[in-house]
Image (tube, rainbow, N blue to C red; front, side, top):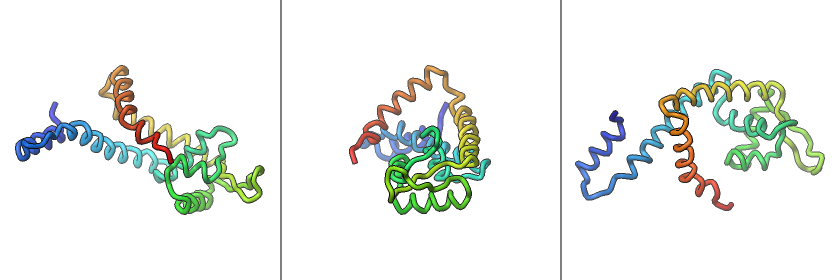
Length: 165
């Protein structure tokens, strides 16, 4: 079965036979798959009136376990955004009633961000919708192929995820 990347690679091999375009065979597919995944994510989240960034913050809090709260600094680490961006996101989620700010009992100057019951429900429902979308994307692969692919992708992403700082 031929795909768009096969056609792209064939064209580059014809036009630039002096270059080794083999990396395109993997990474162009990863890039294209990322775009398809982004669309599937946006669709799953839109069904629950969430933006992707809202899902990221809500699910970071949900994964923290009861009482579903983290400091803004912990949220920064998990969502890879700046402090100013996180402050804006917390403000917006608070206005929507999905999170609340509480004083940090261990630091008089600090705050904790906690999921509200509505925020927890929306996160849970959006996650279920996302997993349905993702299962459909992976349906062509057997269980062993999914395990192998996950391992290979982990090999590629782990160095990026484990850079200090």
